[in-house]
Length: 328
Image 1 (cartoon, rainbow, N blue to C red):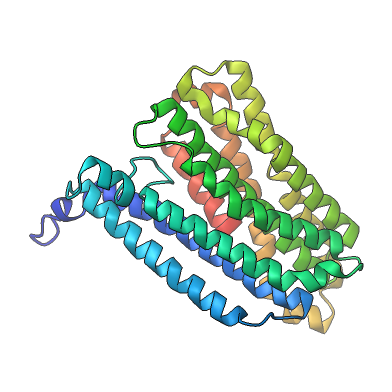
Image 2 (image 1 turned 120 degrees about the vertical axis):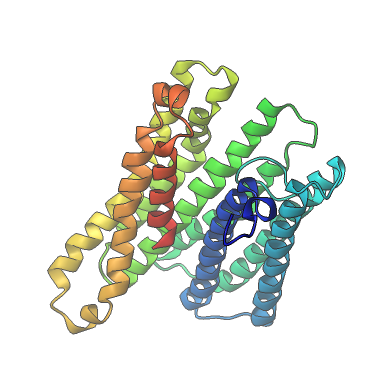
């Protein structure tokens, strides 16, 4: 009860928890997609015709998906929809992909629209043969992965066996939420640090290449540590945990080198003007190491997955990693 209002009857825990997770994911997606839309024309020095119109349409579509899916989840949990309508418009019952199938499809369409806007703005820069080209190719590749890997959440149906549905759900969680957004973060951080003169172009490109290789070749292997629910052998879980733990390395290395170079060059006036943005990016790299790395690996080994998955250790990892890699 809240001042006589039966809050549990209006906003059950299953709804408040779903909204908590979904709003965080929408916030992450909106922030990073907006970052991409801001950086793409800044990098190429070219803003295509009707780009503003496209961005405004994308923002309007985002509002429709966010408000529509949150409303649908409430209606589903409050049993205002039937089984079929709940699957299509309401609450899927799976964490991180709670939104109904129609909202999932609309979100995927929005991501593809974002990718088109990104590629249009980046094309002039990609055609140039300068030193940034490799970094820009990886930036574009991570944008393609963000747009396309969300489709893994569409690989199960309303009556698919839970083990199979959970398998594809973890593709969304591990490869989309945790994975390619982190590659995108690494590329953005690397690009900004090189432009500020705090990171060597070669070091930035190597770090981003390492990050991309881990996610493209090891990202799927890293997903194995999530499959503890379907009698996966311990050796396979351990292999997945090892690859998953490697994911934090590139962003940490970038942050470390940038911090070292910042310490050496902070006496210059123009660097001082960028003090707080630089501190924010370095803090992102540190919290990536602590939240995603230390707290993440604490729950990755097989014995932790079998016995303490879903306890407060998971919440500590999730919140610290989200705060670090995405929040800052």
